[in-house]
Amino acid sequence: MADTITVLGNVATDPDRGATATGIPTLSFRMATNHRRQDSTGAWVDAGTNWFEVRAYRALAENAEASLTKGDAVVVVGRLKLREWEGKDGKRISVEIEADTIGPDLRRGRSSYHRMSHAPAPAADAGSSGGGEAGFAPVGAGAPESAGDAWATPGEQAPPF
Image (tube, rainbow, N blue to C red; front, side, top):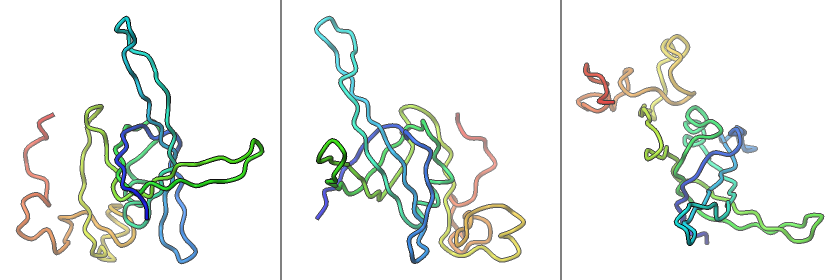
């Protein structure tokens, strides 16, 4: 059994796309969390950095690959896994998070959300629109979920930021 954890930090490496032996999309990247505290004079000092290996699968892997770059501020929710291994310096422990959710940390920037439908895009639209990964299409591009959903199709007004 693994523990659920929520971690706020920065993408520390370029996300690395892969696939399982059965073809399931995967994505992994290292994540760093920096802790700061005030010292006795009131000045902020770095209190250390924690490192995590984040792994994502399936649609989360595909969407994260299209969205994340090194240096991005992110929030990751997932299952914590500690792995022991032998290194040249003796036993080592790596900390991994099998991600359930990855999102931008909106305290530190702005984001634009593009909801994806789970219905395959029509063959004619898939190559010409350039929108979406295989098996996913932007909602509002003829996907069944867009009917009657005001949030599925962008409105005429510009975003408030």
